[in-house]
Image 1 (tube, rainbow, N blue to C red):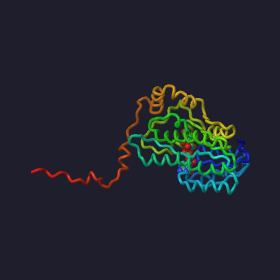
Image 2 (cartoon, rainbow, N blue to C red):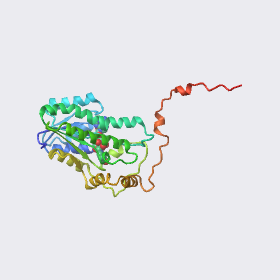
Image 3 (cartoon, helix red, strand yellow):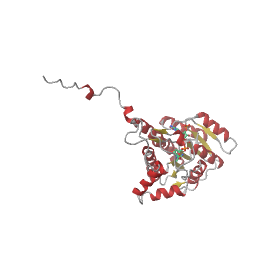
Image 4 (cartoon, rainbow, N blue to C red):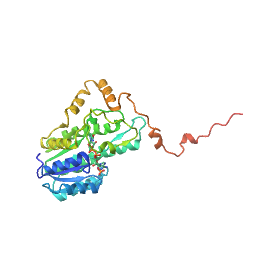
Length: 295
Ligand SMILES: NC(=O)c1ccc[n+]([C@@H]2O[C@H](COP(=O)([O-])OP(=O)(O)OC[C@H]3O[C@@H](n4cnc5c(N)ncnc54)[C@H](OP(=O)(O)O)[C@@H]3O)[C@@H](O)[C@H]2O)c1
């Protein structure tokens, strides 16, 4: 689909990849709906893009809130009378061990990265069906194909999003609605700074190159323009994904080495985070009277 004159909703538009995607779409003469939680940042971006062709609409939205997402799509329809493209980009990260990581953090991660995207899809597809056209781009990650230590919960949200993309594409075949999945690798944004960290994981080695967010935004626009099923940003990312199932044990070793460094470990959390969440009220077991000493 050509973007010129089309209406595109971009979630997570206040920063990084989403912000660059809004810019890329505006450059391609689309009307862009800027959605994320931070109104000030969205308004600043809308002002920056004022000279580009097309219109910008700011709709502060928390994607974990289904009703807010429905209102976002309704507002888009009121303003532009169509919703042609949905970019599910809003996302957060988490460094946490699976075995004793915080369940609250994992639930929140799923709420944003997985349920947030599902909310947007369910809100937009009825309008796209009615129009007989639409394009949904789900921003997954190389981590949605290859899991790394302490990124397991994050990876799980992106594996899930990848599965949703593939199933949805088949379910919508013949409706005029297309679905793409974009798999960025390391990208130079505030993502890592914004991550919740239950454990400290070393920075990636300098020879692992990061892409700029503009390169990812370009791939997102190309995915819409050329109806790409899966879009990778660099050859290294594609090679990692292709190599992984060919030699999984070797790949696990290589990922551990790259991700954690030669000593292949990170310090354990000061206190297992799960324990911090356990209820403080005494459990039934605590209340059982100790047996009295026999006389
Ligand atoms: N950077 C990387 O290395 C990398 C690699 C692979 C994939 N990705 C994926 O790319 C996407 C964008 O990440 P980024 O690198 O651009 O990170 P970023 O700079 O931290 O941006 C994340 C965006 O998500 C928004 N967001 C967070 N929680 C939200 C919520 N509950 N509701 C609505 N919006 C929310 C944030 O805006 P507000 O705070 O205003 O809500 C922000 O605009 C994510 O899905 C991420 O998983 C990133």
